[in-house]
Structures are given as C-alpha cells and as structure tokens.
Image (cartoon, rainbow, N blue to C red; front, side, top):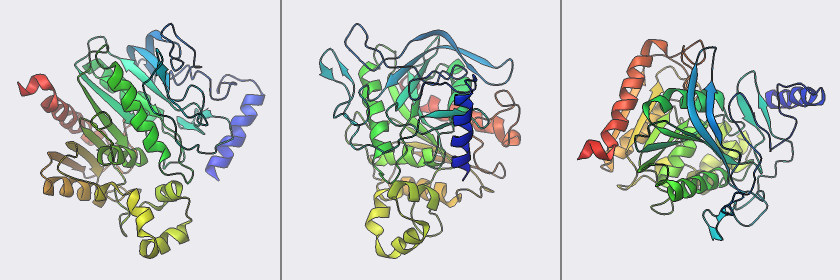
Length: 372
C-alpha cells in the first residue's frame, strides 16, 4: 500500500511538472543526489556512460557537502531486454541482464524518504571519485526490502562520509527481483566486471562490497555466490543483513520478493520447498574462500533479527575466514549513514564514533600498503 501511494503521488507531481521528480522516467537526473543521467555513446564506443560531473556534490542537510567527480554507468545501455551489457571498443566488458524484472512503471525518486523506485532498464552504478584515492573502492547496495532502494540514507550519505577519506564509491542502483531472484545478483556482478576493468585508471587496487538490510543480503549473496575472481569482492561490509531463510531468521518480505511466493507459501516452503529458499541463503554458501567481512547490527533491531549477523560471523569463523562483528545495544534498524552531519538526526548517535572507528580500522587493515 505504501508503494502504491508513493507511485500515485509521484505521478501526480510529474503531471504537475514540478521539480521534485524528474519528468523523464529512467533517463533522468536526480540533481540533488547525482542519481542518473541518460546513457550516451562516448568516443571509445561505449554506450554506458552518462555525463561526467566535475566538482559534483553529495548533498545532505545544509552545509554538508562532499566534493568529488561522479560518473553514471548504465549496466544495460540497450535496456534489460537486450542480450548484452556494456561494450567498449567492440569488446564486451560486462554480461547481459539475463532476465527482465517485468517492471513497467516509470522510475521515480521519493524525496520524502530518499528512496529510488521502479529501477528497470536504467540499472546503473553511480561512481564518486575522491580527490586523493587510497586504492580501495566500495560498491554499495542500498537496502529497501527488495521493494525500493534507500538511495539517500544508504547511498549518497555513505558517499558523503567515505569520500573525504579517499575511498572510491560506487552506488549500485540494482533492479528489483519481482519474483526473479537472480536479477539483483546479476546487476552486482556486472558492476564488479565494469569496475575491475577500469580499476587501474581509477587508481583502485581493491574492490569490496557494502550492503544494508536487503542490500546486505545482496552483498552477502555476492560474497558467497561469485562466479570468478573478477566478481569476487575483496572484502565485505554488512549492515543489519538478511542472511538466512531458516525459521526464526528469515525476513519474509525479502524472500517474497526474491521468490515470488506469498507469505503462506513461504511458510509452507520452509518445509516443502527448501531448495528454492536455500538458493538465496548466503549462509549456505560460505567457504574458506569467502571474503573477509565486517558486520554491524543493533541488538534491538526489530526488522532483521541480530541472529542473522551472528550466524554469518560464526560460519565465517568456522571456515577460517577473518571476520568482525560489532553489535550495538541500541539503534534499531535502518540507521545506515543517517548521521547528525548528513541527516540532522542519528538513531545510532551514542555509538556512531565507535562505528566509524571500527569501519576505518577494518578497511585500513586490508589495504595492501598496510600489509607490507
């Protein structure tokens, strides 16, 4: 119902020709957050690159800005019904979209909660470049229950917080599964293929993944079901992630979107159709080759049980994979990068300093220079 009213109100705003939402679906610029640009061909023959924004800004509340260059890369320049991805100089850089998510409504950005909705043909990476890159790139999967993308609080606010420290940031605007569970993972793996291909020119030597909530599920899935060294993340950072379909841990909303099953069918599937649910359970794919991980969760999270993070952490330890888990006594669900500086409020405020200290220490420990 919330999604329906979002769409109706957004549509009325479009008809009124106001400036809250861009009137060109799927090829628009969310000017406040550098969300998307129309795909255009460049001199090298790539059809994936949108306009490059020099001295762009990630904006939060008044006075919060993170200067950077940004680049919008459309993963499927010819749309999700094409059989190919990005081609540069006649060479395929990424794979095709696989199946389409059947979304027919136009994409729109909901200013009130900072969510991006109905991503389809315009699946893309929004990349922000720091002035002095430190060699690490983080691809971010915003959450939203596989119903929407919390693009602001778990995307651009993350960029605002991380770019000044030298991290190259890529926000993946992935397609919603709508019952086609492989679609989001396909988008993430194609994002890795593109970024690995261009890592040298960006002064990037490591590419990891970060995800929140359902985006944390996707990041964990990408970290356990990669296809080769190119699509394997170098590290994983998970915020209050969904990682298991087991009773007591499952987030039914996410698994409904992934499988197309109803709540009642999922409850039955816990007994009768385990193969389908297990396919999207990252905890069942952990091996000794799974990337090192850092997990954050709040003990009072009522959206996703903290036992999900404990499960992932415990299995990594059992497999001999370096892992850290930080559980905060409060904060609830969905705090992301909503800090006092970016959003003017912070559910994690008592623990925010400890959060950043742990995050940066983890990343520093993995940087190649730190290991020499």
